[in-house]
Length: 168
Image (cartoon, rainbow, N blue to C red; front, top):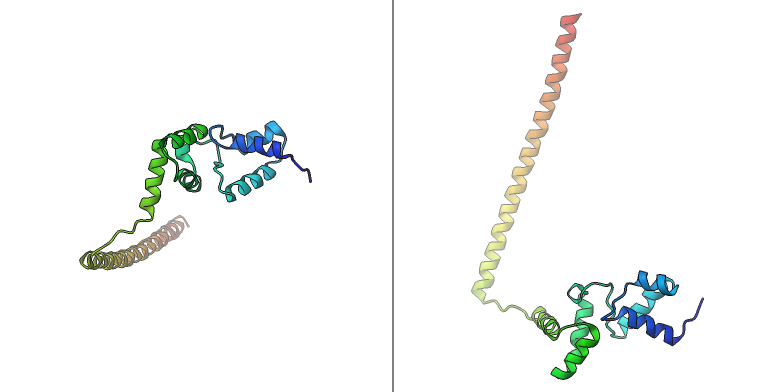
């Protein structure tokens, strides 16, 4: 097993990280490091809380984990520090703010009144009844189609039998 220097690892991390965001395949090809090694390094860096996107995608295409890591890293920064942080990673402060808001919204539970909850339960029960009726109707139609197919087969067989008798 080959050992790589910290300088090589740092170069790879820089290439994987924003704003470069080079793919593992490209880095592997250019540096001659096996892709499995690169994936393991990226996994380790992510577990350490670093932003190492999975591809060359634009920031809006990043995984939720990478976006959340950016939100966490930038949480305590003032406007000037945030601008510098974003410049280093090829981001815009507006993106980070959108991601922060999305993270907050994802954890917010909608509060329903008792009447709203009862109405939702009624609708759910109604949907369940409708689904049951549709399944029953579908079963009935499938049986009718199977009967019709069997009758058609019998009719063709009868016609073939009758035409053989007429010829013979």
